[in-house]
Amino acid sequence: MRILLIHSDYLKYKTRSKTRIAEKIDDEKKKGEFKDSLVVFTAVEKEDEKNPEGVVENAILEIKDILAKVGAKNVVIYPYAHLSSSLSSPDAAKKILQDMESRLDELDIPVGRAPFGWYKSFEVSCKGHPLSELSRTITAEKPEKKEEKPEEEKS
Amino acid sequence: MRILLIHSDYLKYKTRSKTRIAEKIDDEKKKGEFKDSLVVFTAVEKEDEKNPEGVVENAILEIKDILAKVGAKNVVIYPYAHLSSSLSSPDAAKKILQDMESRLDELDIPVGRAPFGWYKSFEVSCKGHPLSELSRTITAEKPEKKEEKPEEEKS
Ligand SMILES: [Mg+2]
Image (cartoon, rainbow over all chains, first blue to last red; front, side, top):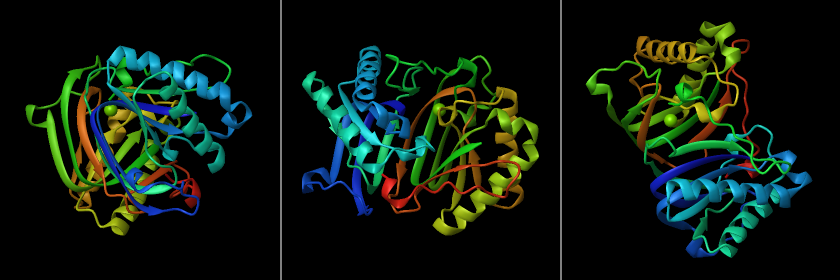
């Protein structure tokens, strides 16, 4: 799993059109707006299908850790296929994204999730402090695999 | 080179703090605002150092092609290390990003570029039509290497 975490003043999205395997959603999920959030753009990868529970658990550890550091009020899980060129099946991705949402909810962390498999318009801000944009590769094996870019390569 | 292309109603950025190898910039480059743009989030990769001219040329071909399809008014080159885990040296990245800007300018395509090596706050919108979010891997060898996600995996 590849994730890009953005500490954001706001994220808004609106569904525009379905793809063939669009997640079935209620009308109220067709748009969303979240303030002061850690937005977790997420690409579920083929590799993750071997041990989805392990990947979800390690993703949650990482998200909790960063959430504590940046002090955002909410987490938003946002499916983002463009972060990987080795994607899982759509069904595996949907399940993992939903499980991430459930786990955060169980931990009483306010969480939203944008629907999978829809073309969406969105608006997002990034606060711009040094921890406001981070990316990680999450595996089932290790609690977390740091992939901090050297400072000089950040941009 | 990995690029993520977003057809955007607006992109705004503001520099917040320097990293050690921040590009030297004039005050007017410390913030920027662009309307109706194709924003090209760009990670220059180690591989690109072998033939930077070839990579730039192929990136420009790809950008021109997508620009014509979506009909945006401007291109904005936005350095984005988080798209790759195999980054080039910062110097190679700066040179390639600057060359992309120059090439587009030579072609009379209105182009902006966000500075390299700064922490920046930003706000961006994505229009949400099917071509408004695309990602590509650009190499020096081929004019373009399509990496379209299957429709069902888009999200
Ligand atoms: Mg950046």
